[in-house]
Length: 382
Ligand code: BDR
Ligand code: CA
Image (cartoon, rainbow, N blue to C red; front, top):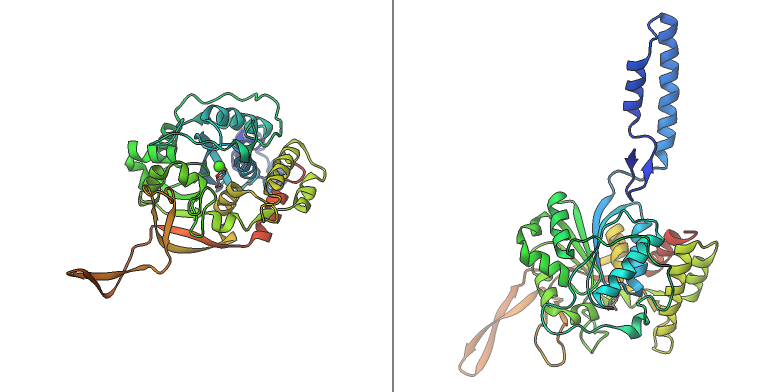
């Protein structure tokens, strides 16, 4: 049987094979028999063509989601698993919103809910490259899912270490995999540090993290980068194409009660769970000046599915790995140049400007309304 982009099976592997087998097996050698054969084959062709219309295209793009689930992570995963344009090859779990152990449990519960126990879910780093892990129970509730309960998972954890699984899959599918990190970048950095040869083999990195317009942990830093700035520094400077889906766009794309109400119409278990998580998010943001709940990570998945949701600008982005007030800040050079300066005694003289090489495609705009409609439509009725 053939598998579609999300691993489900279809009864017809290949119409041509079926037809050939029929011809080989057929005993129709007479003229009348030959005519019968042709009529039968034509009918068979029409049946196969009609059956394959609903099938997911075989050119679905392969992705790995590196995640710390986490409320909005859960929404991102469900969006990915319900989108035929992409094929999720693995979930790798990183410590962040919750501990790696809780993240693994949540990742397995989500794949179980979606009926996707075929998908490898592998635990990775239990803390940042340097310093200690800072989790976020306030934003994710005590169970990491905003209190929304899921039944115990039927799926089992993959025993490989997350960064090793990333390395293995990138070598298995050279130039085909897009990485979607939606937690601290620790696993991705560990993979690059262990095996830098993966860098040119990765198709691209579409990450949720960073901001060039202020932070959500402090005045400057976004949580995922703040959690492990050294890892983000490795990922931003590895040399592969990076798209940064940061707070600049995720904090202006807010789920409202009306969106959740649409999600709840004829809802199955996935939509019901997503609605409960979204309601928790909306509740958190009430009274903060935001007009709804930010579902950050789902936007990175959305951008990997359809980059046209975003407007991007190529920039040099540096990660602040030191600092007293801005550790984890992503500093984007909006002009693409720096001053050429000469030091004369105690005076700096500017003698021109020199261009700086961009390393990141920064999301600076988003069609929020279209994205939210898309998000709801993908989970509606599921
Ligand atoms: C990011 O940090 C976490 O709280 C969310 O899951 C998201 O990945 C937003 O800053
Ligand atoms: Ca996350």
